[in-house]
Amino acid sequence: MNRARPSLAASTRMNLESRLEKHRTRLDKHLARLLPPEDAEPRALHQAMRYSVLGGGKRIRPILCLETTAALTDRTAGVEDLACAIEFIHTYSLIHDDLPALDNDDLRRGQPTCHKRFGEAIAILAGDALLTLAFEILGRMPQPEPYRRTQILRELAAAAGTRGGMIGGQVADLDAVGKKVSPEQLKAIHGSKTGALIRAAVRSGGLFAGARGRTFEHLSVYGEKIGLAFQIVDDVLDVRSSPDRLGKPAGKDAARHKATYPAVHGLEASERMAAELVEAACAELEFLGPRGGILEALACHLLERTA
Amino acid sequence: MNRARPSLAASTRMNLESRLEKHRTRLDKHLARLLPPEDAEPRALHQAMRYSVLGGGKRIRPILCLETTAALTDRTAGVEDLACAIEFIHTYSLIHDDLPALDNDDLRRGQPTCHKRFGEAIAILAGDALLTLAFEILGRMPQPEPYRRTQILRELAAAAGTRGGMIGGQVADLDAVGKKVSPEQLKAIHGSKTGALIRAAVRSGGLFAGARGRTFEHLSVYGEKIGLAFQIVDDVLDVRSSPDRLGKPAGKDAARHKATYPAVHGLEASERMAAELVEAACAELEFLGPRGGILEALACHLLERTA
Image (cartoon, rainbow over all chains, first blue to last red; front, side):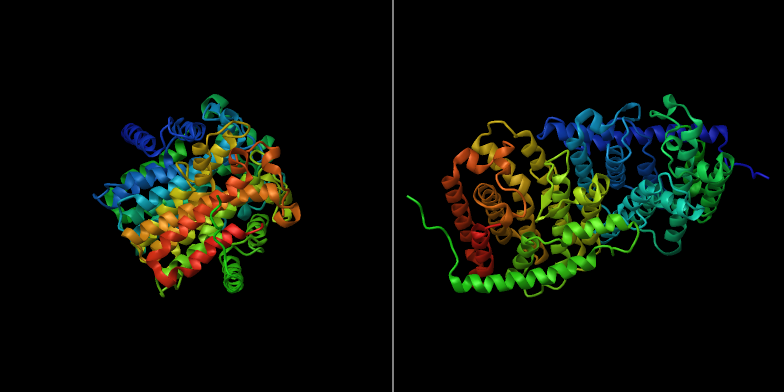
């Protein structure tokens, strides 16, 4: 028997949509400011960086970071730097993932991928440059105090790294192509490939606000669960959605024999698992009281997304 | 008329060689400890990282960092972490530089390059992982105090970055292939491609020791000049040396129509310029008195190297 799927009331959904739109506008401006200008040398490289970062995107990770900080404190000044650094790490991973030697994708967000547009050499270096820029920003952002900044640095570097982090997940994902993977292996792949950076977005937003102890633990579990749910929904959308909506071909995972939740658990069970994860994630936010409302709504929003 | 080339007395040379050898042994052990173990998943990735870092190398950048710190203070405990982070950044840049889409090199230090040995996907991700690991180490190293650590982070990220940094230099280097470049352009390319990280090795060693003001400025000029000299010597060796000695084919720059000092200034003028840079670099160290002896010897050593 299916439990009720966690979902948003229509009024909350409208409020959330307008809030997200405001975040995206603010973030896009801040991302554009932090990126090197297009007319500075080397131009092709800077153009490729700006093309890949500013060509749309849901900005889910930086928004999670901003909202986590805002749920804990009113002193949020300066957190946009951190949020944008996270988006740069995310974008670098997309650029490298799309390369011919990896996923060999031609389209991303409805546009040619970075290497299709600028060539492979520039795409490799633009990815490198975005990762480097992310860490430079963490080094120079004025908030929080330096010790907290080094904690945030460790958090993001580990989440982007090889052991349980994003790069480790990418390798495991490539390794699993065409193989039979167990549910546990699949969970580990998704948790590292996608989950780790989403969790780190929440945790680093928490660290920015000074979170520790039980507060930090609750946020960690929330972040972990929505991170996994996010990738399951991604898998499901690859089966259910259309190329127009996704901005990239649909059905690609199956065609490539990728390890996905629908392939291992079936479509309906995958949807149920994502819903259960979101529900459990929201339960972690009780300690926040009404201040947790937006993070709850965000979790439901990730479940309901269609692209 | 040629000025005398700065060079080392035989006894100094022997002392320096044994000191460098000790550094290398210590650094190799520390690098091996900081790298993920080969038997941890994802294995191929961790093997590729270890293969590329531990397969030899002169360790010039980390040694410059260690010796700069040691020239300024006796409190050097913990500086190996920083030195190894710099070597990881250097190694990542070599792995990506060697890729088919960039320099397309098959040999490095006499061994197959990372992508030749592990495939392109793993090589791209191993480079990414080393860059990420470098920053993780900067985040978690216990020394110096956090504010200094964020300064060091900024220093290294900027030196590895796009504007006057390593990635910017790599793009400019690729752009310059087959073109006529002015002496000023060539100096800018070499200064960013190679010089920036060498300068940052010196400066971050200085920051670790608490250097500021005039001290920091002298170290910066020293680092800049030996960084440029180092790349000029590299260019000269590509003309003069043998593949056996270099561990990679010689004469490759000319075959590829790369912008080099010998191509623009001729061989002898290039050698003279490198010698003058080293001489000027050493003049910056006067303020250190006898404590600057090793850094002086190191600068001469870079000039005299044959591989």
